[in-house]
Structures are given as C-alpha cells and as structure tokens.
Figure (cartoon, rainbow, N blue to C red):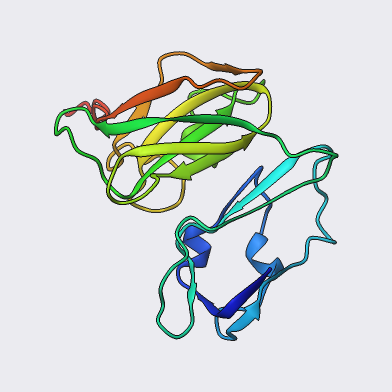
Length: 204
C-alpha cells in the first residue's frame, strides 16, 4: 500500500483487528513503528489463510501522517483468497439506553454462530467482523464485506480496546435474535447499550 506521505502508527497493536482473525498479524506489517515510510507492506506468504474468504484489515485510527500525525479514520485493507469479495452489509444506530447519547469508543461486532459459539465466546474471543462508529459526530455504524451465514450482533463500549467483553466495565447491547445473512438487505438495526448486572456474591 503506497501513501503520498510518510506514515506512522499509533496504538497499532490495540487498534488493528483482522476479520477473520490472523494470529500475530503485527509481525507481518512493515515498516515498523520506529521506521516511517510511504509504503506499507503486509507479507502473509507464511500464513495459512482460509480458502474463498474475504479478509478485512481494519486499522482503526492507527495510521497517520508522520509529520502532522493526522490519522486516516477507519483505514481498511480488504482482499480475498477466492474469486470474489464478499459484499453483504450490516448497518444501524447504537446509543446509550438511558442517557440517549453515544460513546466514541463503541465497537459493533458480528460473531459467527456455529458449533463453537456459546455464552462465554464474547469474553474469550474476538469477533469475526467488527467496526467502529462512522465518526465521532453520530452513532451510525456499518460493517462491510460479510460472508453469508448466521451471526450474533453485539455493540460494546470497549474501554480496554481488546474486543473482549469485561462485564464489570463495558456497556453492551445484544440484538435479540440471530441474523441470517443470505442476500443484500437495506434493513437497519438499533442497538441500546447498558451495563450488565454484576454477578451475585455470597457473603458469610
């Protein structure tokens, strides 16, 4: 990827999320944070990628101009290991259930519902797909390049920037039913965030 100016990274390890996930993705990206360049190289020749799959590298706001530090908002790089790029889309609005506002740290996630998906998945695994709010001025979202399948749609205020749910800190919203994504649709989804009830404790 060639830019018109030298670039630098900010919080790349926290901001970058790849869907489907690629382990240790940071080590395949050059230049490093200490060596600004106009060219970004992503060498995945040693990675076993899934066949016929669209991969999205979402850099968030981690890539910016080396001189002024201005970030490229929600910079993404998309490629496919098959003959086509998956094109299904999920979009909508997310807001606080009680305050009627939104938090810029909100992320919206899609977990594939398969034999491995269960109640603890959101605590342990990063989602198959994710996006952030469109910008800091409104609460709309859009997830692109989704493959057909069944998904759980979740929104979360991700204070730790790790794409995993912390029940004691993170506000969360679940869409009440699974999404069956088969063909393009213009349906939008409203997500309302709230803190979960804390776990019960027994004192003696």
